[in-house]
Image: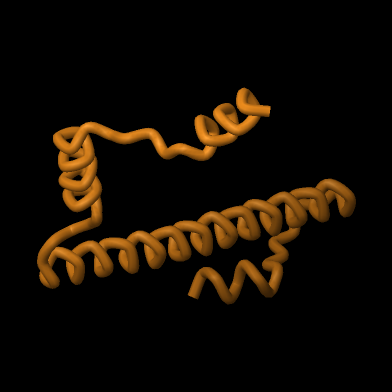
Length: 98
């Protein structure tokens, strides 16, 4: 019975840490808390917003280029089916050219 009680006390007892180690850990956490000044935080936020806008813009450009290539391919296929070199401008190509 006594061994069981001693074992329970051993398991529930908290392990003491070295005060210097604890102080170093606290300093490390405070240093990694984030950017210190408000102006630096504002700059970081502005950079993140610009990054999102740039991603959206490049995605839209890629989609537009993909659509343009699809339309050109459709027009080429139409010419091959007709067997002529007739100049036919798809409405999507006409609008994007302006």
